[in-house]
Image (cartoon, rainbow, N blue to C red; front, side, top):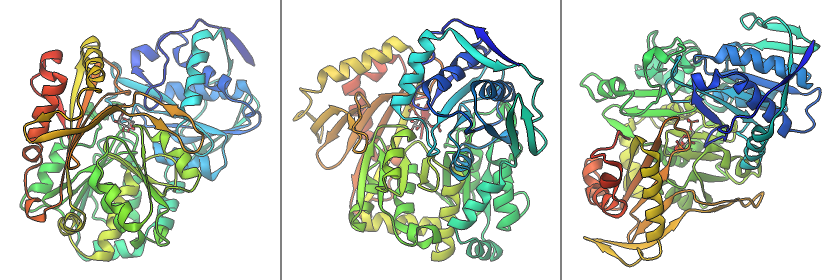
Length: 542
Ligand code: G16
């Protein structure tokens, strides 16, 4: 039986950089999830009888919302739902399932790298038929709907069995529970030279992958251990837990510290990697060397043609604006296009759909290609392994040669988390007020070339996104960028991105923070970070 339920709007359902992310108790308010899901459906047209994909990263509250979403999909007229067994689908796997089965779209339940648990974070994101996150015009329409919603529709049926693969009928709609790993693993086998990687590993090349008690565990076990022959135990923390074991499933040098220490140790494996809560981010560490995500994007792009899926070369590269310009130099050398977009994977979708770019990346540990329309943690790991298997050199050697050829973009991001929102907004406003007068000013040896608030004109759909981050560019290619996070759930997070270009190979051995010290000091001088936020140190340095 289909029931129409009266409801009242919540005023805080504005999607951020990547969907709606809030604390679990916020989502547990009466009709909170229902309102948002109904607003998604209300913003769409033409889905009657079509397929919807539903899955999440297994965090606390995942199963409850999956039940709600399936019952609401049935009540709203979808013809079929594909859902991962146990309610599990990594974000890139969900994107693949949407594309492979030509679904109308998908609902992805995740708050990504944010912690999970009864008082931690949850999230709902809508992906469109290309498999990618809904563009701003869709998220704007969803938000508008949440402001006026009066009713939602739900099928009054018993809970769906999510743990047995196969088909079942829910109020006249078919629900198919699918294995979350198979389709994704098949796709990876098509893109990469698995026999070559098996040979590399069989020859004694040791890898370690930290799944951080999050969704990539089952994917990494199947692909790295079962299909590629990595020693049992190479995949750590492989059981997805609703609270990620109490950890922060963010693969960076702070939250994946143990992996970093291991990779810097005397008996380090040859290759270390990690992924995040929903499997779209990646951390790459070679024996004795951390590869920044910006460098990883550039190095993967420069070597991608060594993998079968990219043997014909790349159409172009896209990076988010705060991501370092390392990839730009590769694009220049390859003679292909380079695109600079605002932060958030949703801005890459149009470029990939139009065939303008093959590989995309963000400094926030996100890399991916047009094989899906999300960033993809394991994909980045496998492309690295494929390159290593062909070149038969260490990660360290590949990185050094890359810097010698292209120059090195020293790069770091400083995050100030849970800052008072007024203080953070005040800081950004004060920066905006200085934009006109900064060019030409000098700070020690640094002279400001240009300063602006980044604005993006999408070349495909012609939409314009303003206020995407304050950029201060110095002569010689150094820069600092300031922006406020759009994924945090408490207070404001200020992100400061710092970059310096060093063409001289004899100067490629400096420790990163030391190489950036003058820029870090100037960033504080211009923005007044310490005085305005009351913080003397960043919360996280990546
Ligand atoms: C952060 C990152 C972005 C990324 C976004 C979503 O956004 O800075 O680069 O696209 O998270 O990533 P995920 O889905 O892995 O959380 P923000 O707005 O917090 O800077």
